Image 1 (cartoon, rainbow, N blue to C red):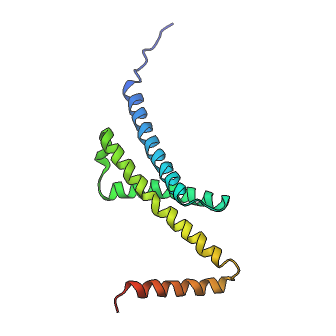
Image 2 (cartoon, helix red, strand yellow; image 1 turned 120 degrees about the vertical axis):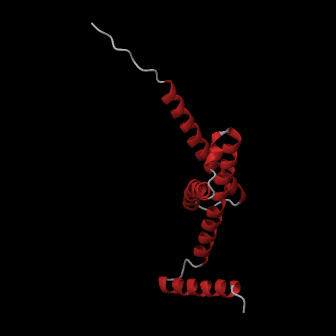
Length: 137
C-alpha cells in the first residue's frame, strides 16, 4: 500500500483565519453601533426594535463598505490599528439609519388614523416644507 504525501494547510488556514477575524470585527462593530444608538433612544414596540436593529446593522455594514471603498481605505485593514479605524467608520455609518427609522415610526404613529391619500398629501407638504427651507429665497 502506497501513501500519498499531503500538503500542509498552513498558508490557506492562516489566510482563512485572518479573513474570518476581519469579517467578525466588522459584524461586531455594526451590532455595537445598533446597541449604542438603541440605548440612547429606546424603541416603543418589538416591531420597531426589530426594524431599527436590522436597518442599523445593514446600514453599518453596507454604508461602511461603501465609505471604505469610496475613500480607498482598504489598505488600512493590513494592521490592527487600521482595522480599528475601519471599525469606527462602520460604526458611524449605522447611526443615521437608526435616526431615520425612529423618525419614520414617529411620523407614521402620528398619522395612523389617516388613509393612503391623506398620507400622500402629508408627504407632499413635507417635501415642499423641506425644499423651501433649504433653497434660498
